[in-house]
Length: 287
Image 1 (cartoon, rainbow, N blue to C red):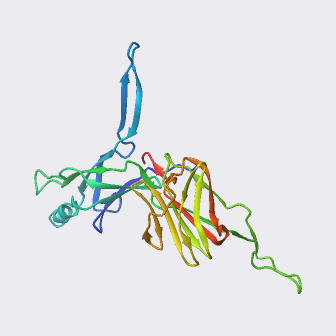
Image 2: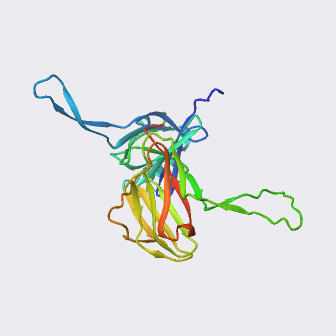
Image 3: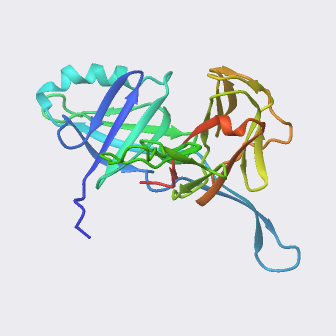
């Protein structure tokens, strides 16, 4: 395995503006904390007659990330300082991208607390800025989603190809099972965004994972698009872009567990008239 070059950079995005900290930027990070792990919260109950306690519940709390950086070009301090003050807008959400040794992950945040600007001597000292970020969802995500495309028709042709007169051509084979195999090799389960493309009449499409399922109660026609979203804080069903609460009450908006999963596609009628796209972002404990 080739030796990895130890490089680290941060990119913050707030309100359409971008601030990069690291090599090639006038802003250089000096210190940081919170990107490796977030707070772990345990609830314990003491044993009545025995020593110690037992863990009643556990959860990962919101993540706090603190970054200190400097303006490396001292001559530009008075030019860049007002821009930085404006950039850290507490009324707008932000996104942090962390790249370390070729691995890039992102996380959403809000400005937490007052950004600290330190420059004891405005003539001789570099400006140092410390900012604290609160991440309500404590898990980092992949910058790009993992995407699977499921087609009921498996292509057989490769090009270039040769044939002879009268032989005919087989363009593909039909799948007997409507099952997609997904692999989540992140650190924790993650939500999924499933898009069903309707090619002909379909009644009540359903996606299933083990004993959990989401069944959409709708009669659909050619050209309709159904989107099922199970992401944390954004669990919904969209039909042609419009949010609809048309689902079986037994439905569970499941997450994709760590490891390999088999996701089955079905319908009360017309399942063979659907193709599907599955997308999810793996989630990580840190960078």
